[in-house]
Image (cartoon, rainbow, N blue to C red; front, side, top):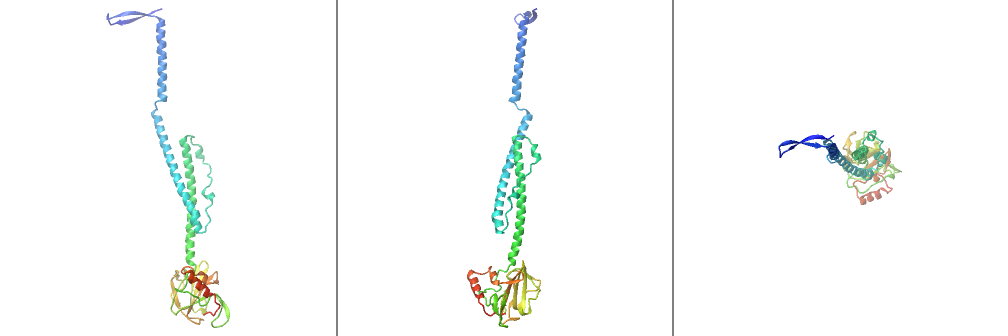
Length: 320
């Protein structure tokens, strides 16, 4: 049944009755419906696929910042690792070679880290994957730095002990400008007994009053080496070394006094069982006298050493 509608006619300035069929109304409703659906689809597509929400924008910005920080951290760790690798190389091939120390085992520097459960709960996203790798690098670096710290501490102790040991080993001549040995180490004729017997040091002729110097760092001993040595100075150097300076005219040190290599300790004389002014010098290792000539190495030229060595080989009469 047709419905009636009124339409305003501007020409006649009056409402006129218009008859509209049901079919016409249905068509208009269908058009309006589909137009609305199409508009809604277009709106949703624009809203979800072309326009980011404020929350999405914030997340993207945070992710970009996180990625940048992780990349920067990873780069810094790579630089630190390169620097540490250089230190490790110098440690193994320079410092430990000089001090004759074994290198740090690779198992200490590059241990297999146990899996950390906190890594398993991280997201699989790219940012968290990079963060996981950076954290593992940091853990490895911490372990390597700890091992290197222990190594350097060990080398410091070795260097300290070795420096002290080297300064405590007899290394210079007890008399300055000494170029020959009057009587050497070994079996020599005793000047008074006139018999061939062991000579436990070397005799060096010099005028009375010639300064005598300590050949290594040590402490002056209070022990009496024997009456036959006359006025004598015995020095304990540690590391199983002692030196003896006998037949002096006068001492310049007292028992218990610490001395340094090259320090004045007395003056040449002819006290005790001596046949002339000279210095009797001994080097004692582990309680046994050894040839002092083999310890002249710090203040001598090859030519001077050869001259002293050749003169010490003569089997002659000792001066004490």
